[in-house]
Image (cartoon, rainbow over all chains, first blue to last red; front, side, top):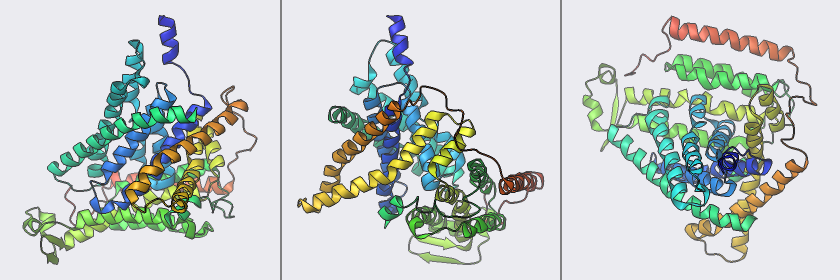
Amino acid sequence: MATAVQTKIIKGFNAVDLVTVAVFAALYRAAWYVWQIFGFLFPFNIVLATFFATLAAVAAAVIVRKVGVFTLYAIAAALINFFFQGEALVASIIYLFLGVFSDAYLYMQIKAGKDPFTSFRDMAIAGGIFAFLWSAVNWGYVFPILFQMEFSIGMLFAVAVSCFVGGVIGGLIGYKLGDRLKGLIY
Amino acid sequence: MAGGGVTNFLANIDRNSWVHKLDPRTKVAILVFFSVFPLLFTDYRFLFFFFLLILPLWLTANLNFRPMIGPFLGVGFFMLILFVFTALRTPAELTNPAPEAANFTWFIKAGPIVVTSHTFFRGLYIAGRMLVPLTIGLFIIATTDPTTLGKGLRKLKVPTAAVFMVLAGLRFIPIVTEQMLNILDAMTIRGVPNSRFERTKLLILPLFVTSLRRTRTMGSACEAKGYGAQKWNNFYQAFRLNRADKIMLITLLVLTLAIIYVRFGLGLGVATVGWTR
């Protein structure tokens, strides 16, 4: 039993999995135009960015169902963003690690004998962790320090919380979407 | 306009210029250089230096800029946001006790919004500082075939999975956008109401499903061709650094050392006008 659990946790990704993760990263990139339309709401239009990022990440996780999906998604999204949209290299390097803690949570759940990819609660928590890190990195470092944008502490906190909430909602919808897509694409 | 820009961002890769012929590893070095070093400076003269450095690359790369209007507009819009958020302040700025902020030569007050010479130029520096780092990626992707770029990344020991995902994602961005436009056209033909919310709601599921079905076809094709069965360390295409590559790499190395010395050895490059940190 222990051997079977260990095998499941360390399962590798095949080409179908990698392309699925990549297309979700590309869909997130395509959704960039949506929050650009709402640029007049800046910085609160970034809530949409966090919403779509977490939605795509959780949906990819529900479809691929392997530990490491969040990390791969973050890597694909960061690299596609860097080459296609243009992004500061330092920010892109930080974005590469955004999915690690979500995958760590999924790893712990699988090690405990659960299947987190079919659990709404577990995917909501994993998505929440992802959204938290996304918001913390963007509003704790990227915008105020790297881009040198001046925000009051209150504004930074409000935007970060809004983005986190938006991300959590995106994760919840992402689970529903992924669950529905699973049945339609197989 | 944005859709056309997205689907045609690869329109320049078949053109002929010395930039197109550079080894992808050299282009990655250019990418890293221009993504990192402009961010070390806040003095407009040093930022202008980076702009002067990259301008010849853009002008001699034999590019058709029309397909790139969409991405340029996106970068320009973000820079505008940076400028606006820095330049537009509240009336409290007029009595800001910080010495740099107090040294303004003119100001404009329109109700609750104030712009001083200090905030205006600082806004230009903040926005201009991002011009080169945010556009260098576009320059590289416009002059490099994605497959060649992927091979170059593999040569630099980037994991195959990461390279594969980037290439797959890049290939799918124009496909996903075209799918989206096709679905929207189909909605129009079938008489779906023009409400943006209604259209978006009806768009999401078909877009995801059609995109994912194509990914599974592509992934299955890769699996059928033995993807992952062996390590890919050999390449049919020979990668050799030619003279232009070597000159470019040596130039980048010299510039790197000079920039580090100027910035950290001599302490130059920090804006003297209105910089508070």
